[in-house]
Image (cartoon, rainbow, N blue to C red; front, side, top):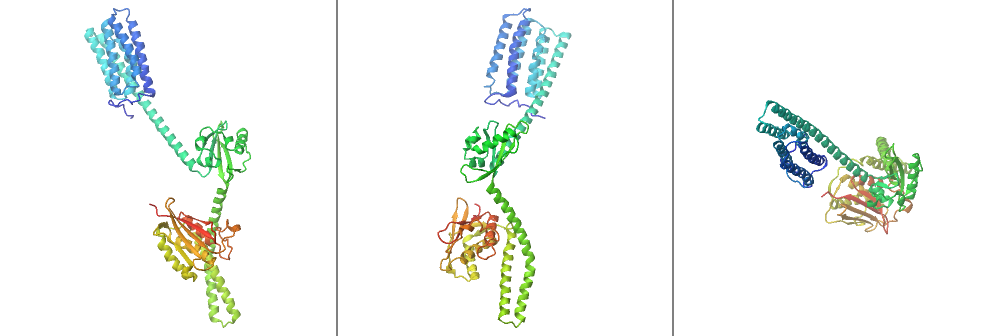
Length: 526
């Protein structure tokens, strides 16, 4: 059941609004007209100046009440009761002055009590009907001795008061339910509009809504950046032709013909990106607005490449698993041949060749098997300084490299958030590559760790003093199975995949000597 108006509730400081204010104004106008009409209807009776003055004062009061509605800060129940009391005083004065039956004037209250029922919507509204009925009955009883006929008529009028009040209550509650539904749906629409705005603003694609006159109705931040517009202007009827003549001409062709038009890529204003436009009408019937999507072709191709590489990684890992068993058998057979056969130099060379290639295949299988570990990391806090000091000693032993070949520059302390096994694999790959391509002298490989507090990143620079990376292969060194040195070609690819799995990244940095790889890893969240 809708909540009734609280008798103690106060009107807003800014006054009533909407339907309530219009209804109160209508009641005030009704009182003005009724004051004149009732006075003129009584003109044939012995009407005194008292009734005339009362009618005039009543009409003036009704007019002033209209002007005071917006500034009124009292309770709704008090306002309605004061108005009803004034109505009853006016009718009583006319009744006493003219000696006409009270029922002659009592029907004047029908619309007023119905309106009070609409406003109050609870039992208090019936108290107003009861007050009017009691006043009517007392007037008949005291002023006209209360004959059966007049009292019966007064009782019927009083019953009408209650009936119309009840109708007003029902209509008021129905109006309140409808208003609540409108408010609720309006809130839902606003919430959905806000959600849509947030989603659109976070899209990687640019989104534009262009009106029938070519004005930009809406643009998300991505489209704003790509087209080089100002965000404030992009949402204030800025013309599409002012941003991109090429895109505007295609929109015109689409808007006029509603058919397939030239959707070849266009360049951003700075020429740095190629964008693929896609258009569709917002309203299929009226076609007043056009929705334009702008897709970064380079980014789309990169995502497609990532999907392709992920599928390749899963396939390669599966094949590596199948190779492992027969490879173990070949390795064992080669060992048995070397032990049992009294072979000469040629046989020893063949056995050594088998063993060398078995080890190479085993290394490939091991690297390929790691492809399946990209998404299985378990990040945890790790002291990067302690981890690197421990790792460098193990690496020097594995590579048979002197400890002096590696120069470490580490912060006093820094906690990163990374999977420990992934961290070891990434650093072993980067430092092994650096040592393999270095001059293998003192401080040939430099490992520097710096902290970027603003970005919440630990930055690991691995630099060697070798020949560096050839320019023609810099775009491919992170691709799987690409190698320029006879290795498996998976090391750097694995480093990149593991870095991404831990919320980090790796890239080839600029260096005056040798090759420089920059690994960024997240710090422990604060």
